[in-house]
Length: 170
Image 1: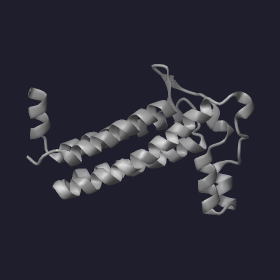
Image 2: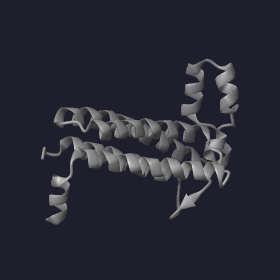
Image 3: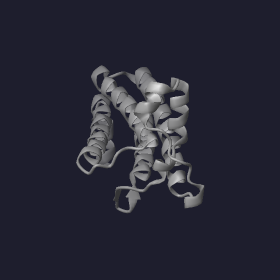
């Protein structure tokens, strides 16, 4: 009963701030993995980072804006759409990591090379398809890898945004 009362008494601003802080922690972890543990992100990891950043921006704007019911529905819809995109990207990443070695696609050119030499539509298509480097399993925590954690976080953050949007006004 007390938890339900807490949920009802908190303003949306605090709930959006919680989403902002969670994604900030996720992004901080990604930077730690890249720059301290030298785990370079693959193309699908870069797409997932972009989606997390877009979600972070929306959660942060919603924190500052502190919208009423209609605005919360708009933020909820936008964040949920991004979360669904993240879920599909993370699912593709998990699928690539579980392919038999002989079915893993070849590694493509690096992102910097593609950005300098390919049209943006082709760069985006290559990023979304993933490559052989996306099949490599790197860092794990509690036996889950980066794409599995990302998938879980996209589900939770999308659900969080929906819960905020559907809650009754104070």
